[in-house]
Length: 326
Ligand SMILES: *[C@@H]1O[C@H](CO)[C@@H](O)[C@H](O)[C@H]1NC(C)=O
Ligand SMILES: *[C@@H]1O[C@H](CO)[C@@H](O)[C@H](O)[C@H]1NC(C)=O
Ligand SMILES: *[C@@H]1O[C@H](CO)[C@@H](O)[C@H](O)[C@H]1NC(C)=O
Ligand SMILES: [Zn+2]
Image 1 (tube, rainbow, N blue to C red):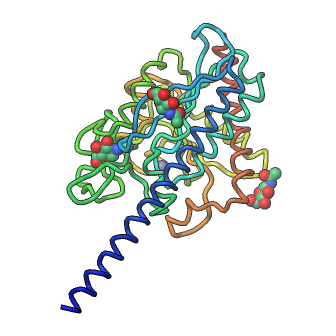
Image 2: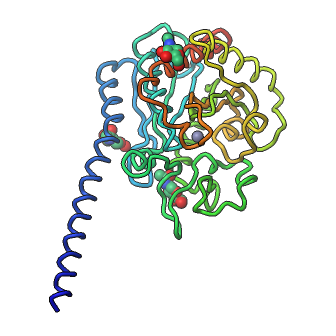
Image 3: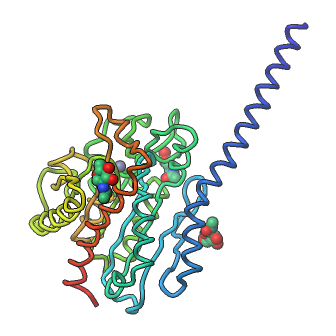
């Protein structure tokens, strides 16, 4: 009897602590998520003429999916550069890179003269929060499965879906989902991409940490018919980064220099939205034979990584401005 009571007491204590823990966790989560949102809102306030925010959907856990549109005019006829980041939760350098680009753009109107920009700094806010507070190496979204949670959003796009992950179990890190666009985040991104596809000249999806610039295809080792242009521009991009501090970015088609992969946003943007310059940019990583460690770039290296990358982004901009600037 006494033992029982003791057990119950301990049990309620544990339950209480668990509830507190959950509460603290929840607070923490809300705070982190709101930092990026707050920054975007602040930019909107400061640069009302050029900055527009588009809340284009909700994550599974009801966080806003937000794009920032930066434009100085042109009546929605200018060519557009579309960038997203944070599809894979643990690749933290992506959102940092996106925020850096946004900051440079709003402060430098030269890059806004004849080209518009649309940037989604955090496509998978649930996963991002989760890996900040619970599991640093979480990659997928947080949707509930039978036993495991999460879909790899970058395998979930409706183009050649699940060609190379047919046998992936829902617990796998690259689970493609039950069906194409089963996830609200990937579906919402596809919709906003389609909305702007007619004037999007370049699509870039920021990932880490394979330090490379990848163009289609991922689902086959073949290269699309404008492969030469894709390669030439990627090489320019890579050279511009190298000039800053000798950081080498590999260039090639995803299947040829990384691995065969299907259902990615890059292949979908090219194959369905018909955006002819479509890239996955794998940002800088840490040299390590342990895959997981490569994502964990030390904070003191972030600035040099994102600023050298921006020199590459400027090359893309000048290519688009020269060819299509309006
Ligand atoms: C989320 O989006 C809604 C509109 O869809 C907006 O009213 C709200 O302010 C947004 N929240 C934040 C934190 O920006
Ligand atoms: C995460 O994946 C599940 C499928 O397992 C999906 O239903 C859910 O909408 C996804 N959540 C997000 C935020 O994408
Ligand atoms: C160049 O790279 C080195 C080594 O990664 C780093 O310590 C240095 O800060 C970088 N310099 C610049 C200008 O980014
Ligand atoms: Zn990734």
